[in-house]
Image (cartoon, rainbow, N blue to C red; front, side, top):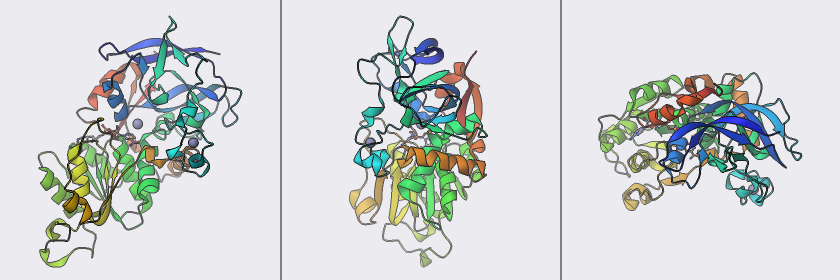
Amino acid sequence: MSVEARAVLLCPDGGDLRLASVLVSEPLGAEVQVEVRAVGVCHSDLHLVGFPHTGPVIPGHEVAGVVTAVGPDVASVAVGDHVAVTLVAWCGSCAACVSGQSYRCENPGATARPEGAGPRLALADGMAVAAGFGVGGFASYVLVHRNQVVRVPSSLPFEQAALLGCGTLTGVGAVLNGARVEAGESVVVLGCGGVGLSVIQGAVLAGASRIVAVDLNQGAVDAALSVGATAGVCAAGLSPEETVEAIRAAGVVAGAGVPGGEANADGGSAAGGVGLDHAFEVVGLPATTRQAVRSLRVGGRAHLIGLHRPGNLTELDLMLDVIQPQRGIQGIFMGQACVPRDVPRYAELALAGRLDLGRLVGSTVSLGDVPSALAALRSGVVGRTVVTELVA
Ligand SMILES: NC(=O)c1ccc[n+]([C@@H]2O[C@H](COP(=O)([O-])OP(=O)(O)OC[C@H]3O[C@@H](n4cnc5c(N)ncnc54)[C@H](O)[C@@H]3O)[C@@H](O)[C@H]2O)c1
Ligand SMILES: [Zn+2]
Ligand SMILES: [Zn+2]
């Protein structure tokens, strides 16, 4: 059955956000219709709002809810199941997918509705509405492909299960799958918002010895310390060089320093520490990307998670910042997740009290608050804002 949903619509004319009624089609083939019970407000939604659009779009992609209908080709979930929904598009049958590396799926378009079948979402006059990131989560219902949906235990609160769809999948996955942090290694996390706090929790799970949390907002640094960071650096008022020095000083692991204060091979002074093993950039700015690389020890690796504006260029001195100190730099998208493996793992860890999803939720709001919640991300929000009131 098709259903009418209340949704936050991004209109192409001027990019304003308004509440609207949207018709959500009945599920065809491999589609799953989900009644949304919670949806997180991720910074990527703010990026999406800033992009040019040719038609109306519903942003929002970090969703948890209850399955209300399934297409004839769906056996993985059933009506009444509690699920987390992700934006990760993977076909399930290409070489990458069948070898467990669905994050580099060769045919992600397979999760879209086949052409000619009509739109998944439409306005009352029939105009098609796009689902932002293939989810369209700021709505009381979503219609997605079965590969985007994973069953979660009904004992996990919806506002926590929603985080499994993006922030936690991305943050914990970046540490465990992307960086493969080893017990005893040191880590710095630049940007401690919804995703950065999950990176910190991932570093705790991995057994990192030092976890240095960096943010411009002291409240975010405090939140990071409360979920397992071992040191915090509030970068407000610090120059980029001072920030790097403060990170390196906070990241010193007992016995790992260079005695005497001589310069290290990578130009860092012993007073500032030899640098860290891993740096996670979770902001999406050239300045913090440079700081991430320059905070590393010889042979350290930078993991870039924050999304940059297309065309953003970051200047690095390739000889002094990368080649001589033998540093690696990689981009990580959605925590290199294997969705049907990782979402249940993280849910299990949450229920066992080893992943504190409750602490990641900053506040809960209603659907009508989405525009102000998105705007608030520009100036810094502590924890994840989650929409839990989907209907008036
Ligand atoms: N790669 C992926 O798969 C993926 C997935 C989800 C989100 N993201 C991206 O990750 C980034 C973070 O997302 P979020 O939802 O956590 O955002 P957020 O707005 O909740 O957090 C960003 C944090 O960065 C801090 N910050 C801003 N400028 C800073 C600076 N110069 N130095 C230090 N800290 C600074 C802010 O104070 C804030 O706490 C965004 O760019 C988002 O689009 C990427
Ligand atoms: Zn997200
Ligand atoms: Zn695939």
